[in-house]
Length: 191
Image (cartoon, one colour):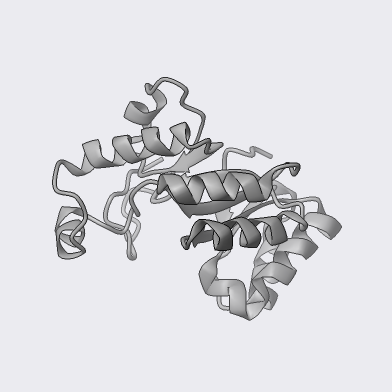
């Protein structure tokens, strides 16, 4: 079992997620549960996989709000003893999340730029002009300065972020086998 592989339980509900985890058995020890499954029992599934099956859990919520709200939400989620939680990489969000996670083992991962976005999407959203690669690396640097335990980035930026002073954990979604459908991802790489 290799904890560098995190399987996304991007299925409709907790029952389908549990079925998939049972099919994968001991071959997988780390699962991602995203926002899309939250209303389908995702938090309960996270707790069951963690407490009853000994799996590691990455709760991909991409929290973004005012500092006090993020801090309170993270403090509430920390009680479930999850391994990773995502927040948007804005420094005020990261700092608040770190406060909320204080005293727990839950690691806060900051989203740099969503892997489903390209430069045209960022322009349409009026997000800072410039080279997408450079914007992503700068957001990672700022998230680390704000205290993030790690960042989420496209595999295309991972090496540049790894070279940053104080670089920590890097999680890369958007990894697809050769010939696989990209789905909603735009910045992908093969394993």
